[in-house]
Length: 393
Image 1 (cartoon, rainbow, N blue to C red):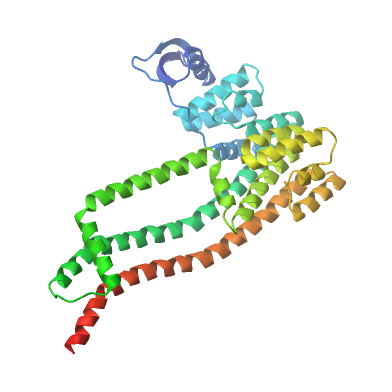
Image 2 (cartoon, rainbow, N blue to C red):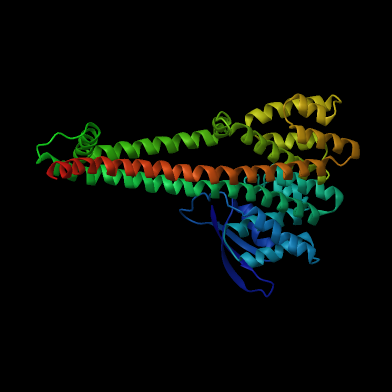
C-alpha cells in the first residue's frame, strides 16, 4: 500500500514522499535507505495493496556488475542504482535491499526475502559467491547463462512467427473468399439455369450458408479460439506443452534434448559458482519438466548414496551418448561444471541447426498448402465460367 512520509534531509529541510511498501516499518526503512530522517508515516486514504514489483533481473545484474567492477561496494552500488531510478516500483525493491544490508543481513538473505523477484537459482549463486568473495564473477556467470537461454528461446520464437503470419493471412483470405466472394458468384450462377460441377456446387452452397449465418460462424470461431488459448495456458501452466510436443514424431527427441541442455547449463553454472552437487541438483528440480524432475530426484538419491554422477544420470535417462562421455571426462578431471556447460553448448548448437533446417522445410510446405487452398477455391469458382464459355464457342 501507499504511505505519505514526512522526512528531513541532511540540510534540515522538510520533504514529502509517497512510498509503496508492505507496512509502515518498511516505508520507514525505505526512506532511511535514502539518507533521510523520518518524521511521520501516514497511510494514504483509499490506498490499495500494491502488486508485486517487476524487476529486469538481467539488467539489474549487468548494472550491479558494472558498478562493482568500478570499485564500488555493494551498498554504494545499490545506492547509485537507487539514485538512478528516482522512483517507482524498482526504487522500492532497491530500498528494501539497502535497508536489509544496513540492518546487517547478508545480501543473499535480503534477496531471498523477495522470492517473487529473485528466484532460488539467483539466490543460490549469490550465496555461493559470498563464501568465495567473488560476487562479480558469479554475476557474470548468471548473465551469460540467462543470455544463452534467451538466445535459444528467441530463435524458437522467431522461427514460429513467420508460419503464424502465413496461417493468419492464408486463413483470412480463405474466409474472405468463402464468406464474401463465393455468395456473389452463387447469385450469378443461379440465373444461368445450368448444372454446375459437383465440387463447385458444394462450395457455392457452403458460401451461401456462410453468408446467411456470418454472425453465428464468427461467434463460434471466436469461441473456438478462446478455448484453444485457454487450453494452451492450462498446458503451459502445468508443463503439459512439453509433454504434447514430446509425442510428436521427429519433435519429441528435440524437446528432450532441449530440456537436457537447460538442465546441463543450469547445473554447470551452479557447480562453477562453488555450489555442491547435491544442493545444486535440489535447486534445479523446481526448474525442469515433470519427466526430467522425476529422473533427477532418483539421480540425486543415487548420488547421495555414493554413485558417480555419470552413472546416476545414465541410469535415470538424463544423458545422451555425447553428454555421458563428457560427464565421465568431468569426473576424471574434477571439472564437472565446465563439462556440463560444454554439453549444453554442444546441444544448443544442434538445436539451432535443427530449427534452421525445420523452418527451411516447413515454411515452403506451408506456403504451398495455403496456395493450394486459395487456388482451389478460385478454380472451383471459375469452373462454371469455363464451362459456359466452352458451350458458347
